[in-house]
Amino acid sequence: MQTQMPFSVLEDVDIVITDDVIKAVGKAAAQTIQADKVIDGRGKTVIPGNVCGHHHYYSGLSRGMLISAGPQNDFIQVLKEWWWRLDRGLDEEACYYSSLICSIDAIASGTTTCIDHHASPAYIAGSLDTIAKGMEEVGVRGSTCYEVTDRNGGMGEVEAGVEENLRFAMASKSRTLVKGMIGGHAPFTIPDEGLRLMAEAMRESGAGMHLHVAEDKYDVVHSHHKYHLDIVDRLEKYGLLTDNSLLVHGLWLNEAEIEKINAHDCFFAHNGRSNMNNNVGYCQNIQKVKNLIIGTDGCGGNMFEELKLAFFKHKDQGGSWWPSDYVSALNRGNQLVGKYFDGKFGKVEAGYKADLTICDYHAPTPLVSDNAAGHFVWGMSSNCVESVMVNGKLVMENHQFPGLDVERIYAEAAKVAKRVWEKVDKIAP
Image (cartoon, rainbow, N blue to C red; front, side):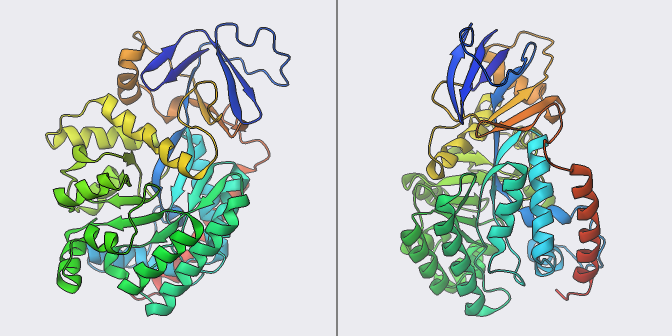
């Protein structure tokens, strides 16, 4: 068995796992071990499980959605005509099947952790339990939160979102696989009182914030027009910038705001594919971000695919980063995971959590520490993912999901999706 850790490749080694932790990695490390289960890893490559640093599980039923929609010539029209109609059509059943299929898709592509950002305005209370239920049944590690916003119901909706975030963040402390964050949609749909309530929930729960910022220039203009502040200054005013918080997109933040985010040790999720799809521009300051991680913004959970697209877009924009910079950013998602779960994540090394992806990758050239990131970007893909382990448990083995009737789940999801589409089609923007 070959292990590929970030920029460190070991050949022909054993990996010994006890419960949920890697106990030993080395040649003949398992020679004297009486194992309950042995995985034949000859010819395989083992990597730390990928982390999706920003997902929207509520988008799980949107693939190919057939609805009548008006013009979508700018970002606000995209939100109003598509996403804000979809999330208003979600109920408990729809959220559950969205969570199941997003989790299955993530695991199948070698992603062991998904950091979710949820919205279902007609079903707020209890919605995060439903998302967590789907994650746990599939076996993916994750966090979730509710998008605090006033876009549908004013302060009543804001308060309901904060309450759901706080309730779940506190209750999830006893959960093994899913933890809570304090979510917010975007500053342009959160009044000052909403930010204050979010800050209180963060202090009470110890959880960080998960928030879209400056995805489109409209968010910046709105902040200057209504609050006379840069977005990040407004967040700092309410104590929302913490070292376990996650800001997302940030395309239109200025350099001073990036410096302030870095000073507070916040995490920052780049979502290259979504930015291209929504035509909102490119994050020109990406190379200045300290704690950069990679997300999909709901475009699935396949981080092999996401990383390639983000890398090539970066080069197309004249960026100077190499594959190693992008693979480092992808792996850095494990540092955020470590803020919420006990243990160390992101390496195939003794003492780290056994969140692992086993790949049947046939390298046509030498695979060594100095070129491992190049193989990840130019050669590896989700097609080579064979088995996945989360928390020491095989949740997918030889492309099969033990204990899950995947065919039935997808068939039911299709029925639910059709029902949701018919409902969404009747919802006015």
